[in-house]
Length: 338
Image (tube, rainbow, N blue to C red):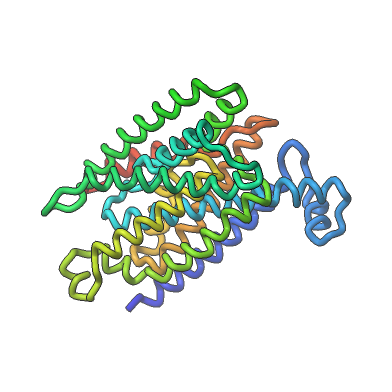
C-alpha cells in the first residue's frame, strides 16, 4: 500500500509540473524571430487574431510545440522503462546508442530510399524504429551473460561504442550527400526538432496513443520486474516475455521521437531520475512525473536554442547535452552499480 503522504506529494508535483509546462508553452509560442504579445497570443488562440498571427501560431509554432512535448515525453518514458527492465540507472536511448542506430538507418534511407514525398512523413518513423530495434538487439545480446543476466557496466560501454561506430558510419555516408542533405543530417544528429508541421504530428501521435497508455497499464508489472527474478516468478510473471515486450515498446517510443526531433540525448536519463527523486520508485507514481519532466526539458531546451541563435536556432539536443552530460557523470559517480 502506498502511503497517503506520497500520493499527495505526487499529485501536488504533477499539478506544479503541468503549470510549468503550460507556462513554458506560452513563452515558447510567443518568442522567436516574430515576437507575439500574450494579448495577441490569447486573441489568436480564441480566433480573434489577425491573419499573420494566425498563420504563425497555427501553421508553424503549434505543430512544433506539440512535436516537442510529445518527443520529450516519449524519450523520458522510454528511458524510464529501459532503466527498470535492465536495472541500470544509466540506461537511456541516447547513451545506449539506440538513437544512433535510428540515425544511421535514416541516413541510409536518404541514400537508397525511393518513396513519394507525401509518404515520407509516415515511413520515416518506421525506418527509425528498424534501426533502433536492430541496435537494441545487438546491445542486449552482447551485454547479457548466461547465469549473470545483463551487466550494467558492459551495457553502457557497448552502447557508447556502438553509438560511436554508427555515428562514424553515418558521417561516412554523409560524404556522398549534397549540401542540403548533409546539413539536414548534421542538424538531426545534433538534436534539431525538424518535424514541425502538422503531417508529422499526425504520423507521430498514433504511436504514442497506443504505446503510452499500455506502458502505464504495465506499471505494476514494472514494479515487480524491478525486484529479483524469484519474486516476479512467484507473482506468475513470465520475465523474458515481459522484458522483451517492454524493451520493444520503449525502443518504438524513442525511435518514433527521434525520427521527428533528431538525436536528442539525456532526456530519457534526467526525466526519470528527477521523478524518482521526488516521488520514489513506484512506477504508477513516477512515470507520469517523468513524462512531464521530459516534455518540459525539451520545450525549455528548444526555446533557449531558438533565442540564443536566431534565425535558425541552436538544436535542442545541444542545450540538453550541456546539462545532461554533467548529470550523467554525476550519476556514474553516485551509482553503486558502476
